[in-house]
Image (cartoon, rainbow, N blue to C red; front, side, top):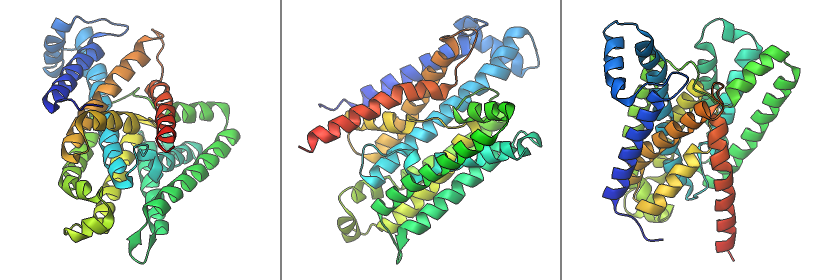
Length: 336
């Protein structure tokens, strides 16, 4: 496939991001004209609490910010993991972060800790995700070297184990508690707040900075570890930095919104086809593309059954699952 000009791709992503943000703020049970969005937001931040101002400033704008940041975090993490694993079907779930976060969240709900504070479940998910990734990394590291294949297989094994424990907890939980767990596991943006947005912004800023500093090393690593060592790149150090950062990024995203799948698979894979394998450019484009996908997915989730809402994780899965099967089929066809 012929690659597109980077300027065109970034221009289209920027336009799609603006359109998605305007629609996300404008549409819903209360329809607000696009021309009124900025004045309504201005009134909210200056203490004028009329209906439209509250809808924009307290509900839709923080939801938009969280959606865009989570999409950017998952997509950029998918891009760097695909580079580390040298596999276009790699995404954040392969290192066990999502399943580890799910287990932590379900445990906090089952034990009643979620009733103590609204941050208990997100913190439990975040800590559990980091613990699982640390264990997987230690298993895959032998004599100071981390095998990509061992890391991948360990991630799959731990994801299966965590999913089994989550299923066991669900089967034993009372109906009300089970509904709360399922709602979180399906991934959603209900109740998004400015506090969550600020926390995610801090993680995303640090994570993006680390990813961009490792972009050149990832480019060289794509040629093979021996070639990378020959030009002064330390493969083991690069993998350590990327995996730790990926765990922090995905743990933060999952702890804020629950499990949202396939964003880290679909976006970077498509953009790599259009832009090529240069990771610095791909990371920035993936951040924009992930935000676009999340905004439009959330818009569909909110509008398709109005006035009821679907969880955004359902929409991303409906997009990503067929795409994954397409990639699998394409890879099998190319191997013959």
